[in-house]
Every structure is written in structure tokens, then in C-alpha cells.
Image 1 (cartoon, rainbow, N blue to C red):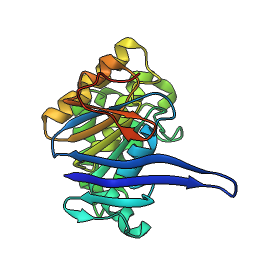
Image 2 (cartoon, rainbow, N blue to C red):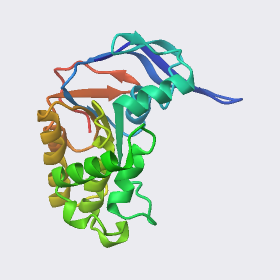
Image 3 (cartoon, one colour):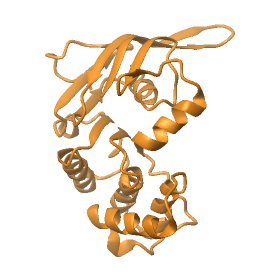
Length: 227
């Protein structure tokens, strides 16, 4: 599904150049659940943002569905993101002024989908993630685990084939973190490709593969996860 080939990412200022990713070679197949681990500052979020087309590589190639998109324009990348990629963040990023179903429906407003179909999809996905009984509640009326369920629903309501999750359990207690991980695992079993950044070895075990990152480089796969 996606392949990074000799991909590097540098951030430059007037005084210093920082290499966040250094000659990354990584292939992720359709239907995989991949956990990305490593110490703070190793490049995990930069790698996820590059995969999600929020950052463009400085060098190398990025093949998404067999197309090299490394030098695509921002508008072209935005179209690909809209059609294929959903994002889940640590901080939930729900809009306080909108209720649960409105927060989820917002993700469909960028698609050419009529109102009746939007309502149908929202109802289906809220039931799927077990939060349909809270459809009319505001984010402030939900627990952290419930808010993250809404965030997951928003990420998958457009039927995206890839979900990128950046520390999706970072703000949750143990029980709610486990619930979210089980939900992601179920989505993966249903065919969604999931790429997750995490510091938690126990949550990484839900993945089918662990990619260890250190100083912007992928470590040999036989090593245990670096935390």
C-alpha cells in the first residue's frame, strides 16, 4: 500500500539544520497494523506526519498505492488525504460547540455526500464504536475514553483505508486505553490499515508489527521495541 524509499526529512532554520528522518526504507502492506516506537525526539511523529502527507520529504520517494507522491503539490496531497487517510490524535481534537454526531459528520462535509447519506454513515459508525447512545451529548459531557471513541468514529466515517494514530491512548487511563486499543484492533481485523505511534509496549503488542526508530533511523526488526 505504501512504501518509503531512502526518505529523509530535514528541518532548517537560519542557524541550524536538523535531520529528523535519515534514509528511511519502510513498506507497509494493506491490512497491516504497525506500531512505531522509540524514545522522545527520535522522529516518530515526523514519520507519521510524512506518511500522512502533512510533511513533505526533503529527499527520497514515497509511493502511495504505487504512485510516487513525494513531489506532489499540497492540493494533490490534500485530495489523497481526504479520500484515503483518517487521523486520530492524543488530544481528541473535538469541537466543543458541536455534539457527538455533529463532530463526526464534520469529517464528511469535505466529501460529495448528501445529508441523508451523511446521517446514515454517522449513525452506523457511532454504533460501530459503541458511542451511539451519546450521539446528542457534547464533548464536555463525555469521559476521555468516550471522546476518543468519537475521534475514532470521525477518522473512519469517510471509509478511509488507512488510519494514522499518534499516541491515541496517551491521555487515557489503563481501562479506557485498553478499550481504544481493542477497538483499533477490531477495525484492523475488518481490513483497515493502521499505523500507530506509541510509547506503550503493551499497546504495541496489539499491532502485527513493531517498527523501532532511533535518531531518525529504523532499527533492525528483530530488536525489542525501544521505549
